[in-house]
Length: 498
Image 1 (cartoon, rainbow, N blue to C red):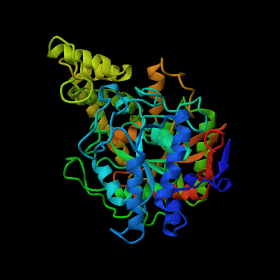
Image 2 (cartoon, rainbow, N blue to C red):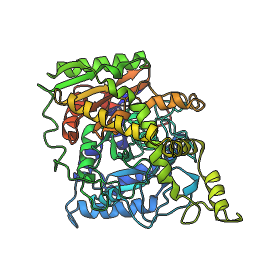
Image 3 (cartoon, helix red, strand yellow):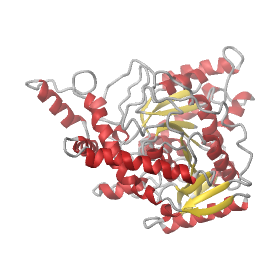
């Protein structure tokens, strides 16, 4: 059910850095590459639904400017110049609809760009459209999108993961080379694993959140998805910037995340937390993970097993903190300023009530209610305050772990992609999809998911976690593993995407 990249002449299945070499050597122009991307989107979207908005005219205008830049007219080109990319539809794009996958923002066109979008444009990247997602990034399957569920290119009867399912599916299907997603509890890494691509959540604060439609502000982080680790490193070089418009933004320690990426893992101390291999891990996922651990050990790293008992509480902590912050963030959608509004209401209270009732989907309403309850008088100390205290303990536990190891290695997801509709009536089962990824958001850690084989015909992901600002180290580890295996060369094989 997979092909090697060498088995197809399709340029859209190349990694971005290889496509960039074609641009530099004049074997193809950015306009030609962008047309190929747009043709592929037109062909595949009726079955995948990875995009909510496609911007062909704007993309071709950007491609023309990129070609001028590649020919020496304008700023010096960088690794993303002329490369078609997607932006998840919860990041503001001036003049282009931004819905966050919700009816309540249907038709909303922001007057400004998110910082990451500004940086992509400055780099000369070609934004071909906006990616489908779970509504307000709340979900693990992309079935909560108000417009259409995304389908996994490896098996279109299955989910791509979420909430950045559109981004992961588009990269896997060759509709774009790189995509920007957001990760609140695993929303980049989990869909990357389920779609067989690379996805990275940087250290909290390393990438500006200005212009990101907030879900849970202390957990949200923007990051890249790409066909391989080097693509993600190049993208991080573009978007990792201190931004005074985001009070949580910080200056990272690295100027170039590709520097030293090929140094290997010989002598590195890698730890496997036993709690991440508990009940619920599918046998095929466990087998692929154990083989990945063996491969890293054969490359010269030192592997040990450790215990992180407090991270077992991370899921409960997350589902108190995230809904609480969401209930505050989503209070701004009242039917008066922008987005959906009920015009036939008798008074302002009815406007808000009817707008929110019609505009928010079931999962968003569920999380708003959970958050409002946790923050309410008489329950704040018992729930929200206690969750924040446990969060501090979890961060300390990770800190102690990184005193004895350089990185942690775990499965990214306990399962492979599951059937569409199989978990929609069981919220707890859906929430458990992120059990391996949520702890990194609780502690603000960087994490990357890299393809690590298959269970049956479906991809499995290997997750590598590092200490705060250990982004370069986890990319180096992921790159070493990736280059020692052939999983990066595999693409979905079906009539759908070839």
